[in-house]
Length: 252
Image (tube, rainbow, N blue to C red):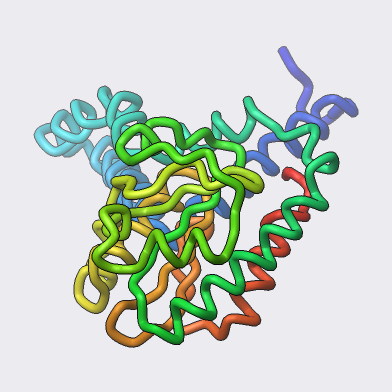
C-alpha cells in the first residue's frame, strides 16, 4: 500500500505532468465548441455521482449507460482537435531555419498582393500550411507549384479567372494550388455575419494548424484565421505581422 504521507520525488513529477497536460488541453480547446462539449460531459458525470449517492436508481442507470460509452463519444466529438494535436506532435519542420530568408521574401510579395486586392476589393482566401499537411485540400484544386509573387496572387483572384473562386494554398515560398475547397466553420456567429470565404478561412484553421488570410469582396477588409479564431477588420500592417510571426517563430 502506498504511503500518501511520505510522497516521493516521482510522485510530485507525476502530479506536475498531469497538471501540465490538463492545462495544455484546456488552453487548446479554449474558445472552441469543444469546451462547451467538455462542460456538458462533466455535468453528466456530476449528475451521475449525485444520483448514485442518493440512490436514484432510474436516473443512475440512464446516466451510467451514457458514461459507459463516453470514451467513444469523446473520440467522435473531439476528432478534429485530437487529429490536430497528434499531427503537431508527430511532424516538425526541423529545417525551417534553412528556408527562412526566402520565406521572408514571400511575406513581402504576399503583402503587396493583399494591398492591391484590398484596394480593388477582390475577394480572396489564402491559406498557409504549417505542420499539418494540407494535401487532402490541395487535391481539390488546381496544382501550381509556383514561386510566390504579388502579380501571380493578384491574377489568381482576379475575376473571371477560373481559379479565383476558392482557396489558394501556400507551402513555404511556393503557391501549391489554387481554387481549393476547404471545410467551413459551423460557428453560429460566423454564419450570421460572414460569407463562405470567412467560414472557410476559420474552418481550415480549426481542423488544422494552418493560418488563413481573407479579403472581403464587399468591403475589402482583411481578416486572419489562426488557432481556431478569426481576427477581422485588420490593417495590412497587422496582417503582415501575423505573417512574419508565422514564418519565423519556432515550432512549439
